[in-house]
Length: 198
Ligand code: B1M
Image (tube, rainbow, N blue to C red; front, top):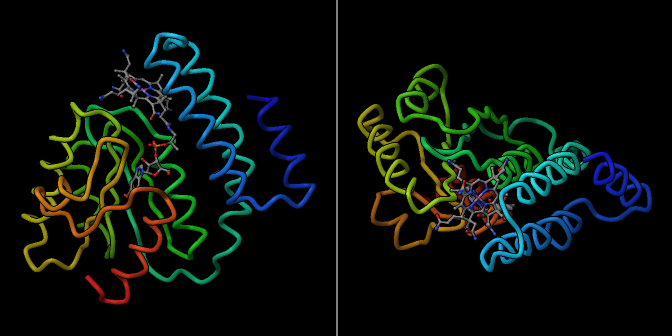
């Protein structure tokens, strides 16, 4: 974690673009860990180490990513759905939304549908972003979208979804307003939603 932090600080000091650092170095490195895990070249302890390194690097790269935005352009709530503890992608989406000027409330991981509902009832929210990394938690995403729809029959709150097993088809099936394949698309989608395009 410390080494990842130091290397990230060095890269930023050398004027490497923070978004390029995330997209071209950090995310591919995590994909490589996934590939190794898939073919039993890496195991859960190695994944945890990689995740800690990513977290350390994100702590360094997050503020410069967020600096790109200034006045809040909208309010978003993000979280990883119930049963799912993966938070790196969700954190990235949150940081990028902040970078795009959104005020972001992060509910964390393993978030039950009722907690998302409580968050949208507590204060006006434009967008709820749901993340799921496990095929087994995709149904929790569906239940969360349903719960938000029931709590907001007028459709004021837009729901966008993402995560490795999620597809546009699945997003349509569960009635989400949008799907982002990555954090950059998630931001473009959030902007579109805010502009009334969805
Ligand atoms: Co897990 N894990 N994991 N894991 N893990 C995967 C997801 C897996 C694909 C690995 C594999 O088998 N190849 C596999 C899932 C298989 C499946 O469901 N079909 C898996 C498994 C099986 C498990 C456990 C069950 C393992 C076990 O215990 N036996 C267990 C489950 C725990 C749980 O959640 N209940 C588990 C645990 C873990 C760790 C804790 C060790 C660790 C997570 C640490 C953490 O997040 N703090 C971990 C990790 C690191 C991974 C991999 C290697 C990397 C995930 C990651 O962070 N990627 C992953 C394999 C892989 O994905 N290559 C794997 C980097 C991140 C930037 O990408 O999250 O995809 P990602 O986010 C992307 C996009 O998906 C998108 O934008 C992001 C940026 O581009 N996106 C959104 C994400 N959310 C979005 C929301 C949006 C829009 C876009 O709108 C709101």
